[in-house]
Length: 300
Image 1 (cartoon, helix red, strand yellow):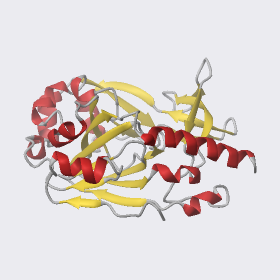
Image 2 (cartoon, one colour):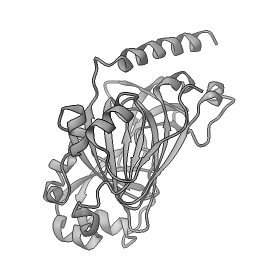
Image 3 (cartoon, one colour):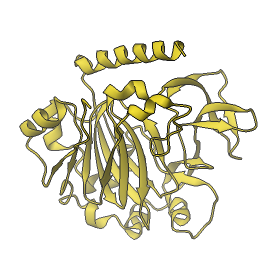
Image 4 (tube, helix red, strand yellow):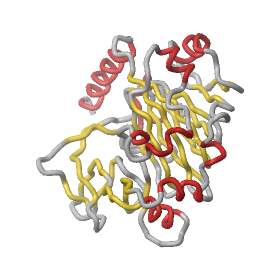
């Protein structure tokens, strides 16, 4: 066990030097308590306040029949597995809240999860309620965030296991989120494969993209793995971290993560993405592990 399952917990935000030495350089996650207690959003962001500020503003909402957007999904109509993209609805924010609060019903899972610096595009009216960068992280990394995103949904939606090429500071403002973490060194346990890409239509049928496109993704649910189909996963050591309201998770670049969420009135989070350092040995090491894993699969 070269990775360990320990996640350092800071009771208050670390200094930039401490963060750089203990988290960034060793590529280890950390949970930071009291990280956003000074943000106005921590007390202001009730549904009533968000209705007042956002109102009829149009937002992008990822919609799926099963809560799994950007996930490997079996389609019984075609008897194939696809990398499934959500149907993206454009709707007034108030309508989204009505559905989240149960005033309007739908069998589908709706999730505000646009990842294009959405705080500064669709939710810019809320940006003064938070710090737009994590000061100790920005100083440690010597850069500003590439993107700051607004997330809102409920327990119907789960983010499937994946990795991002970003240093990620993820703050939960309301509710709680459970992260299942797997380090890059356990890549060979995860069976990343290439899948044809499809998108849900408005009627929630999967439609392959035209022209066709392939997407590399992880097919495993780390909490309920099929070890007969994916036997190498038995050697993985997932780390489960619960990020409570007011906490921030530092998720290092290229760590695999699945995310679940719980909250009676909806779960809200903000995350800041900092581009990873591609000159770091981690990037080339991941390429080596990917090549090794493919050779293992070819030998089956």
